[in-house]
Amino acid sequence: MILAKLMFSEVSDIEWDENIELIDEATHLSASFMLNYFDKFDNVIDNHSFLVINEHKAPMAVCSIGLSEISKTREISFNGTPCAVISITRNVTPSERRKIINFSYVEIFKYAINNNVEIIRMLRHPLNIISSKQNKISAEYMFENIKYNFMYSVDNTLIVDLRTEEDVLLQNVNKYTRQKFRKSLKKGLFVKIYNMEYNSNQLNLKLEEFRMAHLKASGRETRPKSTWISMLEAMEKGNASMFIAYSDENNPVSYLFCGEYKNAAFGWSQVNVEQYEKEFSPRHILEWEAILYYKRNGFSFYEIGERFYETQMFHRSTDKEQSISEFKEKYGTIIYPKIHWTSFIDKETLNVYLDNNVNEFKNSNNLFKMEIE
Image 1 (cartoon, one colour):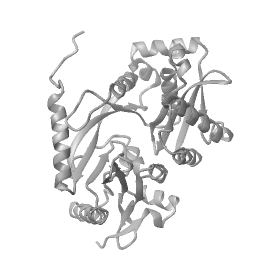
Image 2 (image 1 turned 45 degrees about the horizontal axis):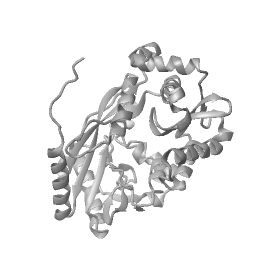
Image 3 (image 1 turned 180 degrees about the vertical axis):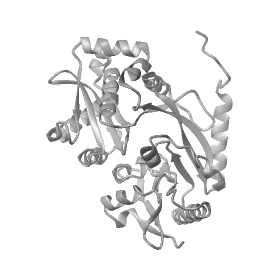
Image 4 (image 1 turned 60 degrees about the horizontal axis):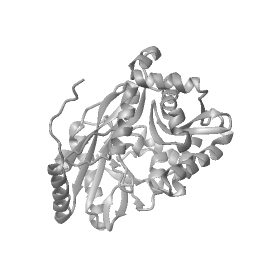
């Protein structure tokens, strides 16, 4: 087998996506609509993503690689967001797999050295093309990166199995959350869908409303406007939908933007209009209506987002992250692992990273505990 690279920059988005659809382990993190979005962040210097192809130009692997500079440190990531782990086709022998992954990491290592990279950040997401084909979440090769001296940390991500019957889905939702549904409906809250099938003539307008609501809630512009343009392009390509909760036809109170890849959808961005948040608690019904939409449109999985807990060895979550993820957990979700991989080119950077994380972990009150009801 003779292997070569085909750069993301050398092909059209359509050709790129057609190729990664042939790579069983590929996830939405390697799709063109996500790479175009990641590339728009200020600290991203280069999108060096590439396909590994064989002598017949068949795709063997996809390497979604971003180069970022954060606080004067160069790293392989997209503005701190980990790159997808190398995704490989399953239509190869074990020895061919080893050759493909070794070829990929040699190319990544050379790129890192040539660009003074100190840290490599990657992520293994549980939902991939295999999930779409087999309607199940695969665990094979989950910890393959250990071979290359990556350190790992594991977050839980919350996924709703949409193959469940609708009445069972509702019963699986926390009782308190179901009460919030009923209260929202009694107050007249309703949800509209915006994508290429519903209200397609208003996508630009409504996304700009969403951006302004996000700016007002944050008190500042948290990311470049070009990232919002990429979100609009994702909607226009059929890779995203927006859900807006209204108290009346002219009064939006909450926005939820979701990405879509194959038979899975995922929460991408969300904001409430602050003055209505306490009165309506709109996020509850908004998330549920998104679940119902994807259920009724043949999707198999909906990822609500990570479930954060107290300080872990290599992850420190904020109180806000913990509170939001506790809310997400109440939708009858199943917990799956999302594995973060970190490796270092520079020994000094490794030592500083370990010292900081170990000391913070030692100072935390991270002891076994149970909530006694």
